[in-house]
Image (cartoon, rainbow, N blue to C red; front, side, top):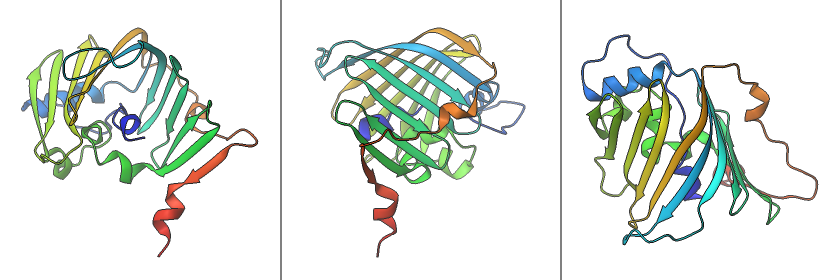
Length: 208
């Protein structure tokens, strides 16, 4: 699940109209992306840049504020949906659904910067780059994500690359993308099929 949580690419909302620092440039650029839809090709490599799985394919949908849907179709089907309050992670092969508190989980990775304009949160990360290429690195060495790279092509994202603390790199190439078109909110809700095993982490965390 942590790997899934590390690929949660949401959009920013309500940011300044003028950009000065590199972080502000990134904030402003993402603020203009009200919605984003794209199919993707996913590659995962180890420290030696050797493939650790077959190339994957899937589809990504983002919508302000803090709504997303990431669906991998190959080599293994997986679905991750968030509506800003709840995360649903569904594994069709295992017929298992895990439910999480979105805010608590997302804040553990640099992707929190893509969901919030909170200055205190941005202060926990370094942002370098400019124009079409930005690199986000956490100041806390204990963060499970070591680096997050975002590349743009015009308004939309073209590539996202994640380096974790095990040296594994996950790269997403976005294709056939659409920017700022209407997106039905129904895509950001999940109703489990009959017979699915459900692990509700929210209830576990709320127990004394």
